[in-house]
Image (cartoon, rainbow, N blue to C red):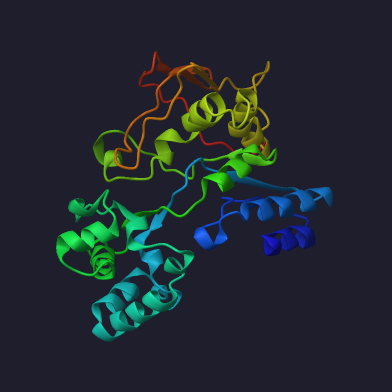
Length: 301
């Protein structure tokens, strides 16, 4: 973050920290330090902001378990290394000694396979469990999945701290972002066990952190997922309710809005979201999609 802020200062550029977190138990609590850097930069007159998603797990490709040198040269080169016994032995020695992931205090039980269509029996299971089921070391199980998926398998890492998350949520210059993907409950976009943030991020903030636990007021929660990110992206006629602005409107039941997606069953739409308008057209009516496709590509204005 210090490096990013320095670049922003020297280049007179805005800085966006995506996504503010402290990964791994040895670093828990340090989100407060990161927020202090943002406060100091803003006091200096720099435009520094951040975003956060409301979960204590992150998600990325399984191949990021490997050391940097094993990834050099692209996917095909990486797969050839995994097929080479000597290279695999070297990878094993480095991962068990100084893995950039495992040195965060994670165990194989903290790593869940999210997407591996060629090995669906692995999806939704921790690497510790997969290794036991397959009768092999969890690292070998990870190697096998990376290979079978040609490097495109995904994992979920349970490595973040709830207290850090709450610190970020209440900071006035931290907005809410899902870091999610375009998914659906059925069809090709409904495969695997992806991170539930793609379905639950915004209703989770509204329902759990605003209504149930009072971590932040409801109007502030709404601002963090509408006006604040729209302003950050330079979308001047989005993210606010005012005459002349584009009618992008979500009408939700504040007493019942909730996220239903879980790590085990992620393909679940939220509850309590009754109506959605995009560019003035109703696309969700009484919690059902109308079939209207009213969105368009946006650019800063």
